[in-house]
Image (cartoon, rainbow, N blue to C red):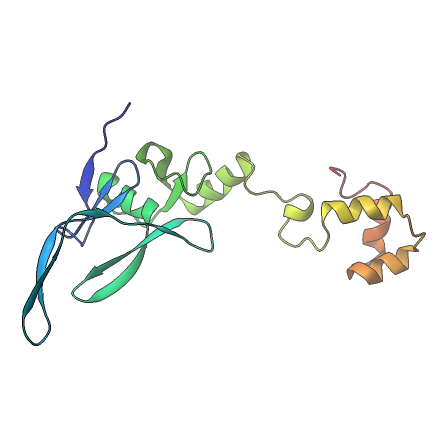
Length: 176
């Protein structure tokens, strides 16, 4: 089993560290606050990451009373591989697996091709970027339990009559 190694977070040296296991911690520190110069302190602690809308883990780091949000995967790569304008890729496709061995820098094109290769992206069926129908709807169109016409199906699902014809003749949505 690999040993957990901690390195300073770029631009937050002495405040935060990130590990090769994808964990981020705040370091112990003291500071003076308020008009009466009260000294405050906290011991070292792990930050609890939040999940972004895109499904990645992120943490909030603060310095000089300014807070900013950072993706954990980018912090790991910056600390262990250096800074880069390239994309961060999760080799296994799991957006929350921020172990260093699972991360790599790559071009946007390589990142997209990798997503198709491992099945995260698809241009087939409901996974296609412009899909108006879902796989289960296509199955129901083919069964046609309610004896609807092609024109009625097209109106129901806001697609063309030719789309319905292609579905019924198995020339499109062939994977369903």
